[in-house]
Amino acid sequence: MSIDPNDFLNQSDDYTDVPPDHRSGFVAVVGRPNVGKSTLMNAILGQKVAIVSHRPQTTRNRIAGILTREDCQIVFIDTPGIHKPQHKLGKYMVDEAFRALPDADVALWVVDVSKMPRRDDRRVAEALRRQHLPVILAMNKIDITPPDKLLAHADAYRALIPDRVEDIAVSALKGQGVDALVDVIRGHLPPGPRYYPPDQVSDIQERFLAAELIREKALMYLQEEVPHAVAVDLQDFEERENGLIYIFARVFVERESQKGILVGKRGSMIKKIGAEARKEIEAAMGKRVYLDLHVKVRPKWRTNPAELRRLGYA
Image 1 (cartoon, rainbow, N blue to C red):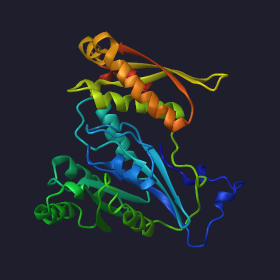
Image 2 (image 1 turned 60 degrees about the horizontal axis):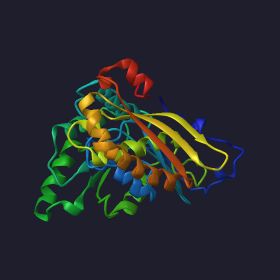
Image 3 (image 1 turned 60 degrees about the vertical axis):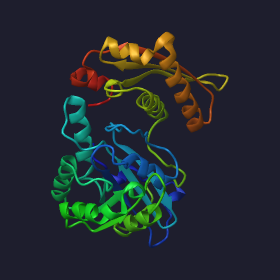
C-alpha cells in the first residue's frame, strides 16, 4: 500500500497552520532483524507504539509512529527486519519493509554497531542503493560496543553505503543521541504541513495494539521456536456499559506440542501472558480490560496463504 500525503490532510483542522520553516515527511526505518528499530522509534516518540523483544523478527507489519515538534512533523514507518525468508510469512515481512522505501522521503538505516556487518545488513544496503532517497545511518547499541572496536565496526557499515547523507551513533535503549538524530532527520525533510494532529503518536488501531501486546508477552516468556509460531487473532473487542473493554482473542500455534508449552502446566503460562498483556493494554488505553485468551492449533499457518490473509499478513 503506497503512502499519499494528501490522504492525511484535513484542511478544516487548525493543526495545518504551521510556521513558515516547518518541515514534514515520511521516514522508513529499515534494518536487519534485532538491531533495535522498534526500540529506537519508541525512544524517539517518548512512548511505546511498537512491541519489542530480544527475539529477531518481532515486528511483522509496518507501523507508523508520529513525532510532532513546533518545527516539524516526522512520520516514522517501522518495518519488519530484512532477512532471507524461510516461509511465506517471512516473505510477507520482507516485502512489507521493501514497500515502505519508494514512498519515503528519507530512509533511516538502523544497524547494530556492536557487531560487524552480517549478510542481512548487506541485503539492506543493496536495497537502499537501488532507491533514490537520502539514507541516514543510525549506528545503534553504542552503549554495549567495545570502544576499541567501535571505529572499525562503524567504518565497515559506512563502506556498505558510501553515498549515505549522514551517520550518527545512538543508543535506543539509553536514549543517547536520539535528539541529535531527530535534528539530522529534520534537516533532510522537505518543507510541508502537518499530516496528523499534534497529540497523535501513531496510526495503529486499539485492536491491533491489543493483539500486538499479547504477542509481545508470548515472545517474552516462551522459548525456542514457539514464539515465532505464535499469531494472535482478536475475535471480539467490545466496550461494555460499565466502561470495561472485553477482549476475546485466539492465540494460534502450529503444533500440539507448542500448544502445550503455550498453555503451560494447569494453564500457568497462558495465564501469565494474559495477566502481563492485560496490564499493558489497560495502561495504553486508560480503561479496565477483561482479557479472554484461547489457544488453538493452526498447522503450518506461516506457509498457508489463506491463513496469512485471514490473519492480516497478506
